[in-house]
Image 1 (cartoon, rainbow, N blue to C red):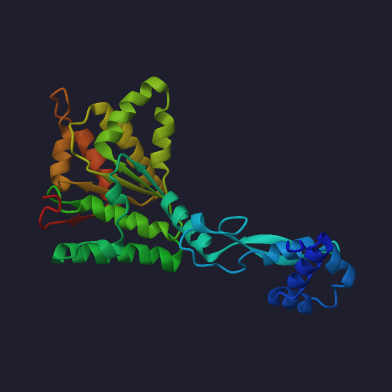
Image 2: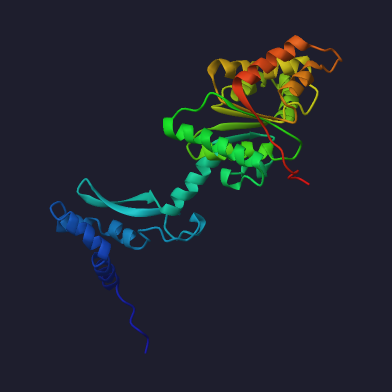
Length: 303
């Protein structure tokens, strides 16, 4: 004997009953009993049913991509508007966490920097010697000052030491820590950036790119001194950026294989073989005004 198929009316009554007996629906109706009436409930049954067919709290799926709700990463909430009960959607805890991570990542703009550097955190800093422990403390103090006062210190660090000791890694760690407080950093690998600036003359984007870098809330210039500078890149690019940041007291971090004296000597040597001591001294004056020198030593992290 063929089983009887429930009629539309029977299916509707079953849906209505299940919806109105839902614990969270009953709680909402009880909390709004002075506003809600029978007619309002009847008109709102489709929305109440929509509400009951979804998880109303974060289901802990581990990723919004796995969310089973109508809107992935959102949970339904009931509210009353114009004499009907309606459904709105709010981000669940998982969605909030993912949006937060995305927002933090967007706080760091990178120009030619390795991905592993941009993932560094202060907790990840290798502090297996006194030098790195001291730098980790200074970096934490820099971030803590912003956290306490809401203002960034005017001076960043000038990190210098041998190739591979982790100078770039420190920049990434500080940038990520600042990003958690919604402070944007621009992290620049200087040799590639300067080559890009030469090419930007042709597409007329030079001034736009210089403005973007020089006005960054926090600027990090990685590996200054890694290539021979022309007078133009030294004076018109680096000089312009550093002068603006010195005038505006914007924190700037710099890494180099040279100490202050070594970098000044390097900056004085032009590609044409000229020695331009005065111009190099002018650049160094700005760097010294912007940074506190910190020497890094230790084993080569890349070996």
